[in-house]
Length: 43
Image 1 (cartoon, helix red, strand yellow):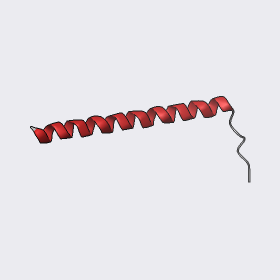
Image 2 (cartoon, helix red, strand yellow):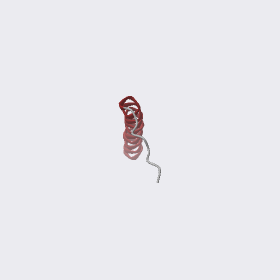
Image 3 (spheres, helix red, strand yellow):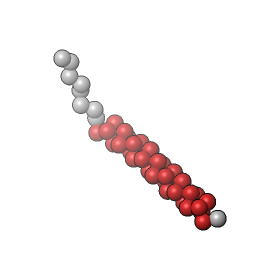
Image 4 (cartoon, helix red, strand yellow):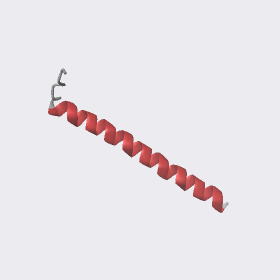
């Protein structure tokens, strides 16, 4: 079995930051969706 070389810390930080950005955007989109659904139910 060939072993994967450990990625350098800068690459790990970049991947983690991009994944955090994606998760943040998904969370924000979910909050906006719930907000609009609650407004639609009130009216």
